[in-house]
Length: 190
Image (cartoon, rainbow, N blue to C red):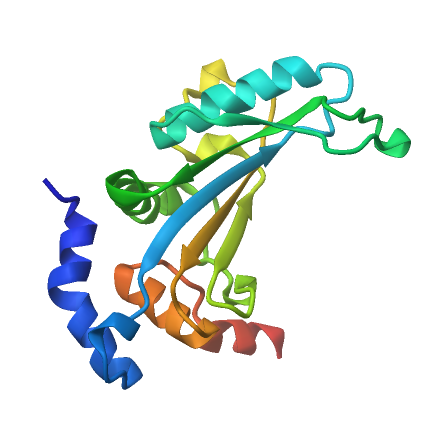
């Protein structure tokens, strides 16, 4: 059975996005290809091994998929990192797990963020991919607050098939991604 957000996208949003973006072919409509979640624990110099294990465990709780360990490619003396040393964890979500994670992220995680005013528009990379980072894992309901040993931050990268940032922005907004309202941001800056 397909996740709810995937069914909504396939049944309703593809045609609406095709009309909104003025695309002639239905295969040109942007789609979400994968979500990549990364965590780097480089600032825990003395307890890096335990921090990497915590990152793998917490990414597993958040996504429902076991994370892989990331190893340093080069030694950097200033950062006290040696080649081959574990420095983080990552996981890539595709298919049904990706859609379920996105649905939980939009409906549950984002409202849990303290003083949340929306996700920034500036985080698009110019090729239709969107990246956002969080410095604390306590916003995720899967993490038990009394079980947190150390603060671990995460980077989420939403990889889309969109050719431009405008197309990716329209697709993510149609899916329900809570972006900041540009009008309010401009008024506050003045």
